[in-house]
Image (cartoon, rainbow, N blue to C red; front, top):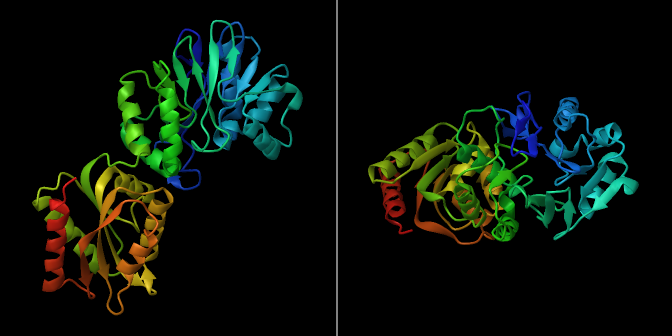
Length: 390
């Protein structure tokens, strides 16, 4: 990744990672990841966050190149996840006159990660504190649990830039040619989605700032139509559906439940449902399925009874949803059980503590394979889903 100008005083000095296969050990990233870092060059110089340890040397070279021989005065650490902070110790060794700027909780984490919190070379900041670099005055905004407890974000009043930590990030390296919303949505619901209340609190603080650019720690710098991105974050963090549609998510052992799920999907399309997505939870990317479940206002879960419970991939999917505060949705159930069917009952129990979950009146019961009776129930479920007012 080439160093590039964000403004006349702010440069991008991050790196692209095309070596990674799973981000955070679980999310498939076929187009890699970007670890973003920025240099603010003024009377004093500040480096905004670091990068993954595997790219430490490239990042330090970028720091030196961007500063053109000047020593950095500050390293501002907004977030302590190792994909951003793993190179902090190397930075402090390379630039012995630099001061780390971060929150009190972040310094406690540094002690855990590195065995030191650089007590003689640190500046602890909190909500409302400022740091003057010259023309640029940086204001610090606490953003706890977006999505770690130590997080701060930083606003530069001179260039009207919000350095947003992991907020407004996305999967994919910066040289990936892909739609922002798709991979930002999958990133948000997989990584940040549990913390909607905290994101809402941060958005309210951001509403008081004149923001012209957003510089996240992953993904592209956002410079145009910021209302679009802020609007999506408001929708996502308030757990509202992004649009009308149905995700039909299924697991199937011998193909009969799959046949029912696909037949239902065709019934929904025939009834004019604006969007129908289908996910095979055993084979498709689980994070993609979670993304679609949050994207649309209706969900169908089709699965077999398995060991008097739910097929493992379906249980995993539902637990992902519940863990990320899935709410404000309508759910239809299709259960397959050759004997003692329990899947529908078990799924309802998993959602017991979820907010504003509405189950359809129709539950489809399959005894091994589709029959005239279960097809009639599929049709009734399709009618109910398509006739629901939203």
